[in-house]
Length: 544
Image 1 (cartoon, rainbow, N blue to C red):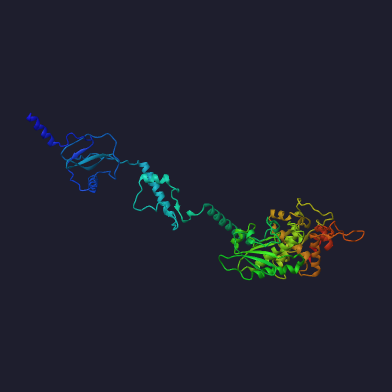
Image 2 (image 1 turned 120 degrees about the horizontal axis):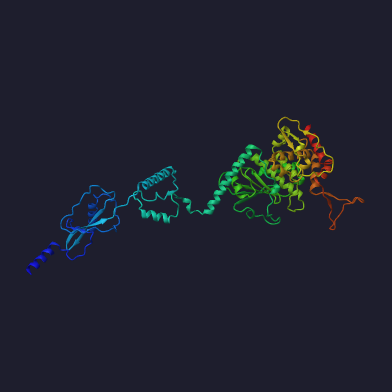
């Protein structure tokens, strides 16, 4: 009995942990000193595990098969393997206090995983490509890269990378800019406008460099809304989005855009009045009411707010509304005067031919455009401008092969088309269309299809010049003939009873007018029997 008690006492002294449950993967020793805090515990663990190879960070505890238990008071001897493994097993020493004594608990840790050589090469190549792409990107002060926003010293873990990829609001490599808060639709609209203005500026420069810029026909500008004649005019009702400043001159109501930048041109109103006087010298019977003029501060505003504005034009006319739209361009007053005279002619011509205020375009196209070009040329001086120079220098002639079968002749009289007419000048020939075809509606559209608009305008100018001012001077006889010619087309002639000679009245007591065609008006005012006779006299005048 005494021997049994002694053996039990010795056993308890040797192993005080008798009866405690121990993990088969844990070894206990008395080598670790007692720590004073949790920080000391962590330092001891890291210090002891640092020499072990493959320790990079705290890896998850392995769930593999546990090793055998070795419990002893002797320090554990580490065996050095003859052939080191690629990923050796790692153990961490964690101090454990039991019964007032501190012991070291060694825990087995799963080895860290390594990439295969092929995968490692791909990852390295991908990192190099990203580094090159980042280096090539220009520095932008307004944008902040998502990668640059993170601290330079911290490296994101795999878990953080996955969260960032799943929850990213922007695609990888994108930037956050100051314009991110702008409305996307407004930004897209501004971008489209900037691109359109840029393209229009380029087309304007190209048109001015290749040939003489010609505005589109004013007959195409037919607005839906027309101001009431007896109501105060509100400019913002027809052109919103612009602050207008109203002023008046002798013959014009001028609405000028309030400037946001730049200095306005001086004496623009004087330019308008000078154009008015040019028209008064040649066609005073056509001039009627006051005209409204809208002046934009620059070309960009003109294109932005005016729906019918073209990049190569300086002005737009709305004959049925009695309005002209221009833009301010300092230093180019002469150009403004010529273009404004052209558009002002359209205003008065259309109002004169639409005497019954129907709102329809009643003026023949060749007469309307030819008269506008003639007045534009006269505004450059008494001797004319570039169109008068073309009349003196161009080798223009009529070619019978230029007939267009889609335009059927309306004359029932004889034709002189077999004859060859020319201005007898040197240089490349410019062929004029037979007058009978040229005077029909649709000839301008045919010229546009042949890309021959400038020659069409030149022919219209030459024909009107021959009718209104053949000798280059404003003689009363020529002006009286031209006035009669235009009045017969626009108003007709009062009908008379052939038996009595009295004027014919309608049921309301008003005089009945007989309408005149262009060919009939030429015969009455100029005594030309038909269109071909008019053309023959024109070529005789050219050859003088």
